[in-house]
Amino acid sequence: MILEDIASKEKWDEFLAYKMEKDFVPQKEKKELEEFIQKKEYVDICAQIANETYSFSIPQKHLISKGHSGKKRTVYTFSKNEMMALKLLSYLLYDYDYLFAPNLYSFRKNSSVKTAIRNISNIKNISKMHGYKVDISNYFNSIDTSILIAHLQYDITDQKLLNLFVSLLQSNVATYHGELLTEQKGVMAGTPISAFLANYYIKEMDEYFWNQPVVYARYADDIILFCHNEEELKKHQQMLMQFLEKYHLKVNHEKEYFFAPTDEWEFLGFSFHEKTIDLSKNSLRKIKGKIRRSARGIRRWMLKKNSTPEIALKAMNRKYNRKFFGKAEKEELSWKYWFFPTITTAESLKIIDQYLQEQERYLVTGKHNKKNYEKVPYDMLKKCGYRSLVNEYYAQNSK
Image 1 (cartoon, rainbow, N blue to C red):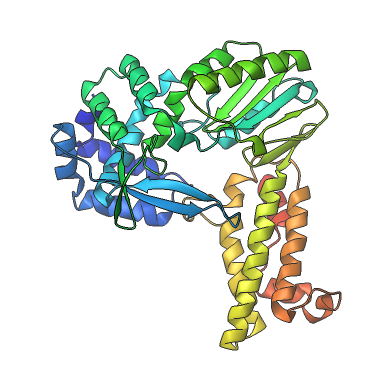
Image 2 (cartoon, rainbow, N blue to C red):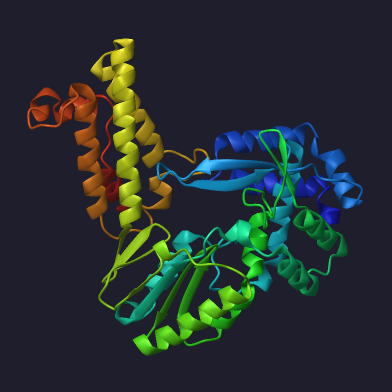
């Protein structure tokens, strides 16, 4: 029984070992977990959770900006010890992985975005198929908990675990800036077990398409569907819509589109066109926006502090060398681990290299013109730590 294991030191040590070997886990998170276990901070809370004598605190609601779009993402958190206990629980929930169809790729122990992209792109004649891409709007927090709880009762035979799920899912309160709110929270995006519950909620849909003569993949709220002809695609797309309606979910129409066999399609930050895998246009747009804002911000800092261009350039390059080539930072894999192993072309990397150089020259001069190449030559960028994405990509793939 899973809740019996949650207080086990052996399981905590196993969980730590699992985290330690993962490149995508930030060092800060690894250290916090290691200290948490060493100090045995898990003992009291986990013993009470296992004995069903623990009452979780009221979660805190947070609104997080989605880049610079002005849109906000709602996430929830519990206290530190509660979040730690739920992290171990989410790891132990891998025992229920057998419940999910192989076409579900999100938050599974031996699956990832890269697995999804590779599996889809390796399908014979995929470039000759018609396709449909859709995104579920505000998926985690829109989940109907009454439906979810009813379905969980069929599959979760561990009564204590089921009771915990029900207790957390039926709670309709949260705090926001110290104010108590009453609201529907779905599976509470941001909490460790929300990923498992989001996987579970529409597993019926995944199973249905796994048994159909179509290509279907889901990663959390992102879904892509391929069929051999347009008529067949529309028939299955309508079935998909019926499933989403059944589960009271809505489509994000801004991210919904059909595509023909020769069209480029995008999924999970990647693009696919005629057997070539590259960064998606959205990924490219986002990184260019970040680079531009960084250059402006560091230039303002340089002028305010009366610093030298060399110091400013080194600061810029440290930031992007970490992002592109470093280990995990803030739960985000660097491009070396995320994009490099999957893309099959350096075309977008060339664009980013050129754009980063342009913005670094602007950082020094405050202008965008041809004279920048003379004032800030490539050698100067290199001396200040600039590393080419294209060169690093080819170096990694030649090993």
